[in-house]
Length: 497
Image (cartoon, rainbow, N blue to C red; front, side, top):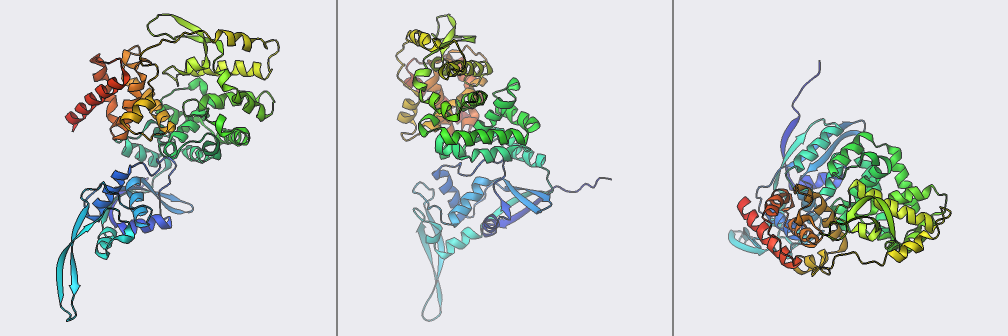
C-alpha cells in the first residue's frame, strides 16, 4: 500500500534565519531550472527593502524539499528575487537609492538619563543612501526580525520541482528566453553548465543582462536542438524545452561543449559578435558541418573574418521571399544579409536557407568543392543590385527609438533580446501578412516590446496586440508610431488596473 501524507508545510522564518540558511547553503538558490537573481531594477529592489524594514507583508517564499542520498536538499524555487535582495542588503552589497517611498521611517528611541530614568522620543530617520551597516540598531532589529512566510513542498521529485517552478511563474513576466529551462528537469543542469562557458563571455561577449534574462540558456538549448533534432525544430521555447527534456542525452551536451572549447581557441571578440542570440544557432550548425571537412579550426575563423564580403553574396535557396514589400515579386536568389532582415528569423525554412547560403560560400572560400571557384566572384557582381525598398524610415532603427524614448544607455545585447521577444509576441497576431508585422513597422514594434518589458508589463502584450492590430491605426513615421502605440498600450494598462 502506497503511503500518502500531506505534501505541503507552512512556516514562518525571520529574515535573520533566512539569510543564515542561504549563507550556509542549507537553502539553495541555484536550481538549474530557476531563473537567476538580479531580475529587479534598482527602484524595485530598494522599495522592497523598505517593505522589509517596515515589517509589511509580502508574498510567501516557496521551497521544494528533496530527499537524496547525500541528505535533505532544500531548493528555493519561488521568491528568489525577494530572498537574494534581502541577503544582499544585509551583507552590504548595495545601499538604498533615492527613489524610495517612503524615504523616512519613524521609530521610538529610549534615552537613559544620568539619573537612570528613561525617556522616549520619536525619531525620523532618512533611509536614502543607507546600507545595512548604517542603520540604527532599532531599525536593524526590525529588519532582521521581519517575518517571512514559507510554503514548503515536501519530498519532491525532479519533475515535481520543475512543475512548481513553471506553476509559480505562469502568471509573471518570465521572458521567452527563461521558459526553456523551466521545462527541462532532466537536462537543465547541462544547459546551465554550458551557459557558463567562457566562449559566451570572452568571445561572443554576452552581457550580464543576457545572462540574467536566460538568453545564453536559450542559445545553448537552441544549439542542442538544431545540432541533434533539427527535423523536429520548433521556435516555441516551451516545445524546445520539452523536446530536449525527453530526448537529449548527456553526450549531446558534452559534444557541444567540445565545440565551444575549440571555438574559444580561434574565435576573436570581433568575429565572436556574429554569435549573437539571433544567429548563434546558424553559426554553431555551420561549425558542425565545417568540422566534417577535416580542416583546422583557424580556417573557420579566417572565413568569419571575411563576413562583410560574404554577407552580400547572392545564392539560390529553396524558399522564396518578397524583398520589396508590396511588389508581389518573390525571389529565391538572395544574400545572407537580405535574408537576415526577415522578421521570422527562427522559422525552420529561414534557418535552412541561411545555413545553405553560408555553407555554399564557405565551401567555395575554403575550396572544399572543386570547380566552384568562380561562384563567389559571379555572385559578388549580382550583389550590387538594389532591391530594397527606400522609405522615409530607412535610417530609423530600433536602437534609435529606444535610446530616444526609453533608455539612452541600452546596449546592443538588450536590443537583440527585444528583437527575439518581438518574434514570439508576433504570434499573437493571426494575420501573418498584417501591416503591423511588416518590416516597415518593425522598429516601432520591437521598441514597444522593449518598453513593455522595462515596465514589467510584457505579459499583457499578447492580449493587447490583436486588439490594437485590428484598429489599423499605424503611422508611417516609426518614432511617431511608437509614441502612438505606447499611448494606446498605456490606456489599455489603465483599464486592466
